[in-house]
Image (tube, rainbow, N blue to C red):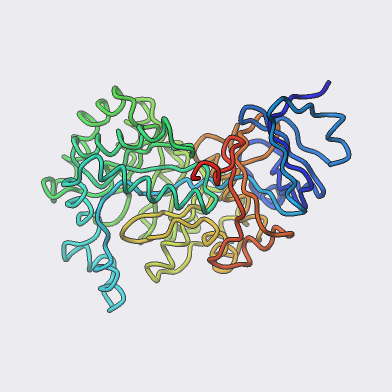
Length: 422
């Protein structure tokens, strides 16, 4: 029996389907892209209904009235990127701090001088909801044109209840109408606000007792995150906080072991976090621990590049058997970059990934880090028709062409993004 379709992409040189074992990909599975050469993909009402060879399509697919058929002329199609770690809910840039860093100041020196996260907090608290929305739309649009079709959006530049709610309300509003799929993360534990300076335990208690229940009752966040780092929140505080959030029904994730080995990755595994992110300073012992778990190791190589830090130990994590994702960490202070294609290049050139492992990391494993691996990150029947059309005849060009992605168009739910912005 033929399946109905309202979109048909034909004459695909390489169709990267990512078909295979469901859920997390690790080991040899992370190198399997399930490529169909000379292929076709069909979707209906925004979902993939069929993939296969050109010779089989008209025995398998029935086009409905007013359907769209696109001959892609031998080019490459991949799933849309899943960026599972971003910070675009803020106002005010920090290029002055960037210049300080270029002159020799370290991240921690800048924070001690009143810069860093608290700089963005001050500006964001003064911003209107309209300003927040404008900034968010600007950066989401850039991400979309660079192939990101699913994106996690964190709060964390308010650090007071009113501003955090306004930020999350902004993300929730866009999630209702914006083309990309948006996952909302409450990052109230991004830093200790000035009003709780030297009282981080009290701040964690305040978040658990007063803020988390409010965020939950208003249904403003899908996930809760915390920055476990020297001088911010300890491993013990992080464990207590994330467990409380999990008990309230939130998914949990974690900034872990970025500048120092604080044991954050171990806490992430213990509390069943969906991802532990950064991991520049993860210990060998905790590499083994995360590799034996279902917590995704999410690496953010753009942050290491931006800050001049050693790159995350991608090859060690992959060889240990961890499920690894790659994300941008887009934020105003330590990685002002929305480009997932650049992160692929950095993963390959600086973190030891094969090209295939990097593609897996920005598709199926990125989706798994957001609990969306049952409908995002692959082009197989039942999954969302989120795709990138590349002006390439070989998928390896995605990583090869550094910083200048050869993207011809992006499709979300079977609709061309180029037509959305006409």
